Length: 254
Image (cartoon, rainbow, N blue to C red):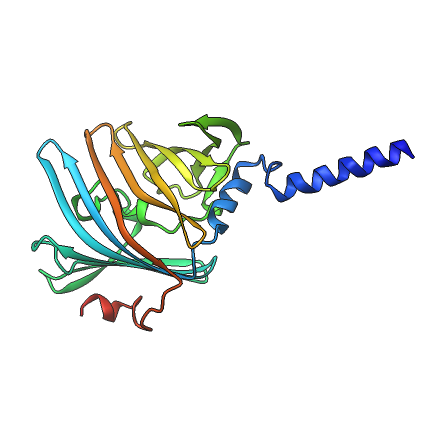
């Protein structure tokens, strides 16, 4: 009887551990949980972009619309409002049945251009983000080792080393530090193939909005160039109604 009680207690504890993701030690399993984290079916975010380099600071404002129908059907639309030299530049990501396409509209040329893999390391609107950095995140795009547990800024994290399955990636290695509680990468360190440099992405000032953990500040830094780009979230709406043509090339040129 005593033995069966011990086994029952052990089984109950095991169930609780699984429910709390405490047993998820595979790096790709944790990245899958990051991908699967609920972020609303739609969202609309009013955002400020601040680019800092040796020439000083430049500020831009933009609205970012997102839609996630399921894990293989996602859309993102970005529309710049200021300053005047980049006003009405729009960027679109369409992913249908796992096939992803990216487009940018430049009003000065009145032309929409498709972004292809050779553009991976091209800087997006002169920021520290490249077009590869704007890809939809999928755990299956990475080869990972086992996760290690650590702390970052007092928060428990999983540390995962990974490489991209795509040989055309501009990065040779990624190190993800994923919050165990929030399932958001607090820090991503990326090794650049071309110049041997390092870039980092930080998700900061994370708050709950409609029960969704939301970074109010995202900073990407390029150590080699000594530059950084900060995205500051001013306002966000989740599960909001969006027009049917929001995520279309036709909408880019309006």
